[in-house]
Amino acid sequence: MTRVPCLALLRLILATAVLIALWQLMVFLGAPRYMLPSPLSVLHTLVAQAVLLWHHALVTLGEIVAGFLCGTLLGTVTALTLSRWAFLRSTVLPLLLLTQAIPVFAIAPLLVLWFGYGPGSKIVMATLIIYFPVASTCYDGLRQTQPGWLDLATTMGGSANRQLFYIRLPAALPSLASGLRMAATAAPIGAIIGEWVGSSAGLGYLMLQANGRMQTDLMFAALIVLLIITITLYFTVDRLCRLAMPWQPDRAGRHALINGERA
Amino acid sequence: MRPSDSLSDSLVPDGFRVLDARLAFGTRVLFDDVSLSLPASSWSCLLGKSGCGKSSLLRMMAGLDVSSDARLTLMDTSHRPFDKRIAWMGQQDLLLPWRRVIDNVQLGAVMRGERHDTDRAMALLERVGLGQAARRYPQTLSGGERARVALARTLFEQAPLVLMDEPFAALDAMTRLDIHAQACELLSDRIVLMVTHDPLEALRLSDQLLVMRDSPARIERVLPPEGAPPRDPAGASISHHHGQLLKALTEQDA
Image (cartoon, rainbow over all chains, first blue to last red; front, side, top):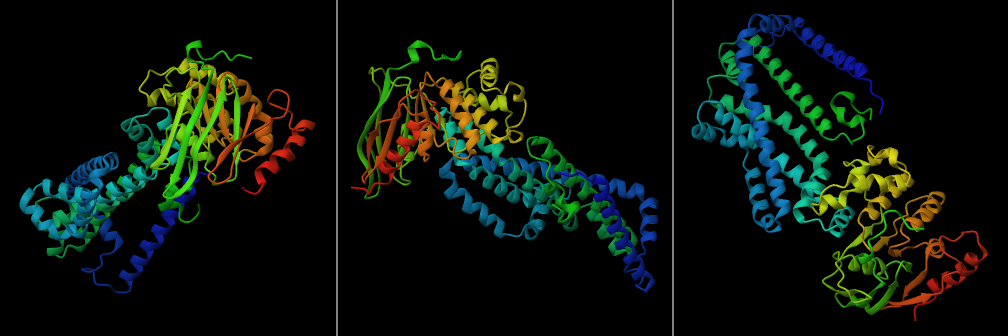
């Protein structure tokens, strides 16, 4: 229950500082500039190219957020449908699994062909990548309702729909939340892969361009912007999930990323 | 002592009867042609070895799934139609962690799609002495407090028949004694059937003691101690009956 965000933050900063020091050391030891630019030159590029980075970051951010929302919505609806109508399980569930057997990366060129070079194909990509984790964690949560609660609801005369929305769905929220946290880190992958395959804007596009021109410092700068987007998305989702579950005790586990093993 | 929240007269039955109850899993028959009667305003305790089917019998009365080969007739002794309104207390308090205490008490209204009756729920919470905890979440309460919220939720149902499956088993001995006295008072106008593993609990609360034994099981009535429940657990009559009841429970199956 102890909350020491300052200490946790301090540790994060310390770890980052050590990492940057190691990076600088590599540069000192003679890593060629076109392979590993120094942290300072990356920082310089970040500032000098801020407008360019900002422009492309907004595109990617839009794709990520749209994909995250679509995937979450679709995944949750799928889980609810599957747990409400038993007969769908035997037909839809194997199909779902089958779609997971196809790597999303493999169909990225197809998606670009179908949905174009614009943000559409990237949103579909991000949606597809998070759809299954969200659907399966939510469905697992819906299945694992404490049977006693359902017994009680049955004796109270609760219909199947009411039991689903008032008992099973709230009971599944913690599972759904862990699925959403996973999705928050996976959605950017979908957007970037989509941009690599074919696009005219976005951080993935920028990185590909910079790579072609040996502008390694710009690649690193784009990477750092992507990192900030992903981390911000993760903590926003984490925060929202906790706000949606005010009854959950303020456990350390929620900050597993920062607090490490100190539970 | 009549609770302020007593049942309206039309709802109070003279008693209930269970007729011709049968439960089998495949070829294994747990009981067949079992019947029992629950008199008006009485508290009955059902004891028996684990696995004898007493919890299943209770679940069947509550209309919960047990087995495909299960049947039972539950009727009002005055032969009025029984509208299936029972209140259920399971092995845990079954409070929903995401609903505040007051909303847990009103869960039945939500489940049936009725209008919330916060005033009545609040009055019930006051009766179990938890009015000030209405806005709290269940996990901030102690085990005894949670049991009392579960009791308020049971009363909210306004059902003539209350079925309990070892509802107080998880509580410590002292808390249990308290909740017994409170349950006895609050449920005085209901017909209660409680499954329990604790002979002392049964002797303290029962107007009617039922022991389930043999295979296939039958139900045997054992005379409860004199005096009105809740009886003093240290009383001489309880310790006398305790020995007899233990003997009835542990006797070799015929």
